Amino acid sequence: SEPGSDDISSSSNSGEASRLEKAKASSSAKANADDRRARIRGVVAIDSATNERIEIESSTVVLTTGTFLRGVLMIGHERYSGGRHLRDSEEVEPPSVGLALTLERFGFPLGRLKTGTPARLDGRTIDWDACNIQPSERPALPFSHLRQSRGEEPPLAAVGNLIDCYQTATNELTHKMVMDYADLLPRYDGMEGKGNGPRYCPSIYKKVERFAERKSHNSFLEPEGLTSDVVYPNGMSGPYPEEIQQKIFRSMKGLEKVAIFRPGYDVEYDFVNPQVLTHTLETKSIAGLYLAGQICGTTGYEEAGAQGIIAGANAGRAAGAAYRGENAPIPFVLGRDEAYIGVLIDDLVTKGATEPYRMFTSRAEYRISLRADNADLRLTRKGAEYGLVTDPERLAAL
Image (cartoon, rainbow, N blue to C red; front, side, top):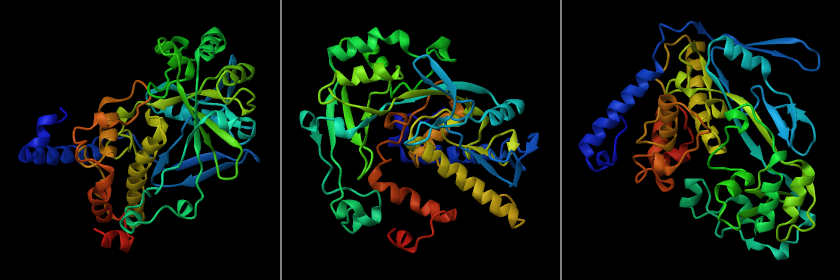
């Protein structure tokens, strides 16, 4: 069972629970080693231009398929195969069908999830003066603890290259259109046609449906770059037909004459139940095969990046040891008491995912001690022990 709040206040019990947890997680990484039916040999790919078969040998492989496993894109009732649209293009990146079939053939339990992205707006057609400005934070706080300790801002912020976002909002007319045109939304493969999407990043339709008493929902208009006219309307995902998307946007303050660069769309894709993984994110049935990101049932950039760190570190260390003819290295595993990464992975591999998983502080029993301001103290030394941190300046700062 997971440690409760009482474990935090008892140092002896907490320490023992932490040691037991790490031992359990470490043994999980070695679990079923004798029972594995296969070991990874590499990757087979097909050159789309020449149709040539390409074989890449490797003792470890990390799959980070995102939304590409048998991906289907949807705008209104239109459905077409693809993993995503290319950035600033109408072109579609093709889905990974063969890879999904291969995982299915090896007995991996697959399910269907969906996610969506809003339309991209033309910033030149927005009445910015009618929206509420959301200025950049000054001084800007850098991610780097070294820069923080030196009192430095991020480089672009230091020279004044900052972008302001703006706030607008939906209204009752917006909500009426959102519901009136609901019959034009896609029908999905999962959840009896409703789709199994992220609970905590709902589409505008889901927000209006769930919170019918609300007369307005905020939307933050976020320019996509220093020199770009493309604007991301945060909170306005909704895969209606393009002309309906434009009607909905034009009902909002400041967007009365807005033009759409590219319509929003949804994507439905396969994922693997993460209970088939160890705490290193290596599959239990195929040695040397690791999974990370949306293929494990998560949603969100940070969640995907967190898994990439663990899967990549363990795969890289294992590949290096195999190349040098050494024994398998000690698994790199973070405990629930050490990092939110540890909480996320422990939740995934022990409980699985029945809907897109997102990390919250409320999921962590040790959230009082897991803070952004002590991340370097918690994790840098461990990173160095496993050969993942080598920068002398970062090590000296400890």
